[in-house]
Length: 217
Image (cartoon, rainbow, N blue to C red; front, side, top):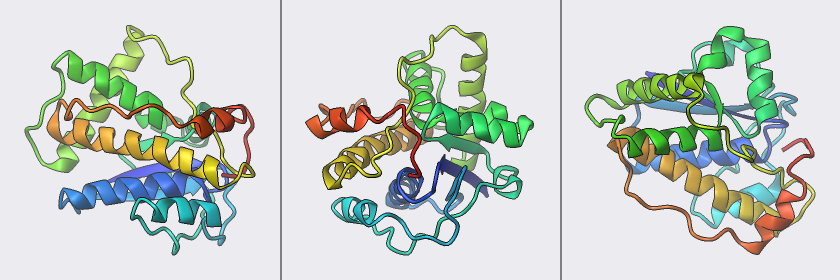
């Protein structure tokens, strides 16, 4: 059994949304051999997901109303084959908590970008079980990152929608859904389906203003 850990700040907005989408996309494929969980670097332990996040996810047919927030801990990071922060600060926090996990820790945007590059070079494949394909994809992504041949993205963060209203949460859900769908397609199919998300809604631009602010989402 392999596992993926999604990390944000409070574990009430972005990471539970990513957890919900990733679970849904894997379930669509009939895959139950990859566990998905989320946590927060300043997790509001015991809290539910933000109401706006629950609403935005419901519009995509994904129910996160039962989510319970957790504080990031070593015993969550240790077994994870892949750790995905919603921002570079979250990824750094994971590496700071457990240095050996740095090689399997990325931001969600960074990881998908690395996989896209690997797919374009024909380096991803679809031979093996889902856990094996996940482990292989993580190793290849870390190798590519380590070589420095692919410059880091100008913006590797997913902006925190907390306090920005329902439209910002909808924009964040749209962005995370596209990334999670692409991630699953690339890991399992080797080259994905070639589809890319459409234009970002104008509300995403509003959310991006807050991208440098680390809230609790």
